[in-house]
Image (cartoon, rainbow, N blue to C red; front, side):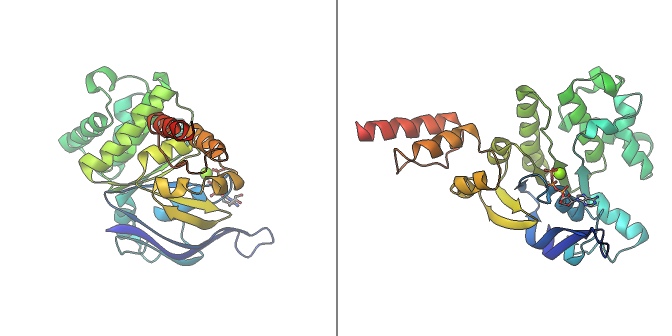
Amino acid sequence: MSIRLVQVGFRYARGLPWETQALKNINLEAGKNEILGIIGPTGSGKTTLLQLMNGVRHPSEGRVLIDDQDPAVLKGREITRLRQKVGLVFQSPEDQLFANSVYEDIAFGPRNLGVTGSELDHRVRWAMEVLDLDFEDLNQRRPQNLSGGQKRRVAIAGVLALKPEYLILDEPTAGLDPEGRKVLLKLIRKLREDLGMGVVMVSHRLQDIMSTCDRVVVLDKGEILRTGTPREILQHGRELIEIGLHLPPINLLLNELKDVFPHLDTTLLGPEEAADEIDRALRGLW
Ligand SMILES: Nc1ncnc2c1ncn2[C@@H]1O[C@H](COP(=O)(O)OP(=O)(O)OP(=O)(O)O)[C@@H](O)[C@H]1O
Ligand SMILES: [Mg+2]
């Protein structure tokens, strides 16, 4: 079970003079039980890719298959059912919080699908629990008055209440403070571990991607430049800098130090590993 893109291309404003080739030659598979990260500079096609994965846009070339079904050829109830499998949370989703209570906001999606009564109640409670939102404390609060991190989690809960099998998140940590980011990234890992969901996430913050994802895709000018584990991607730190990405500070430091210590491993994740490696390098030299 997976979301698969085969030779996918996408052009905005097809046939018009200002036609833009946003994606080309994309071959990619995002599995269940996997957290796939997508990184790339501004305008590289990340958001467009996410929209193709959930079937809100259809490719100009190639095919997108969600669990072997092509949303471009399905109609009516079948397409609704297929889209339901892939929940998409937009960048700044809190802008979409509109109801008078957290409960009503989360209930909105499933209610629209015809879910009512105790099943609806169960879904709202379940989604809040998964996202570590205290039901008694928060369900009647106005979403607009919550903290940034809570709002983001309410927005994700609203998508989760649709019971998707894949969750696609566009810049989920943008605008959050360090604590909010840490909590959210931990919850994203929990979605995969406890629910076996397939998660695809886009982020400008490479440290969020590297610490959370199993596999990473690097997009540049609408094409896949590289795919690999976080460590494999970090082996090409200079390439990431060249296309305009900011390395996590630790990896930037290790890359700088590599000029002095050529054997230094620049792919380490987090300050502890990096400190040990720098310590080894210093001992080796002196
Ligand atoms: N609605 C649209 N109409 C025309 N062109 C678009 C549209 N949306 C995006 N584009 C163009 O398609 C390309 C890819 O855009 P996309 O939004 O997917 O990039 P992105 O990697 O998500 O960028 P960012 O990091 O800024 O969010 C860009 O050249 C962009 O200008
Ligand atoms: Mg984008």
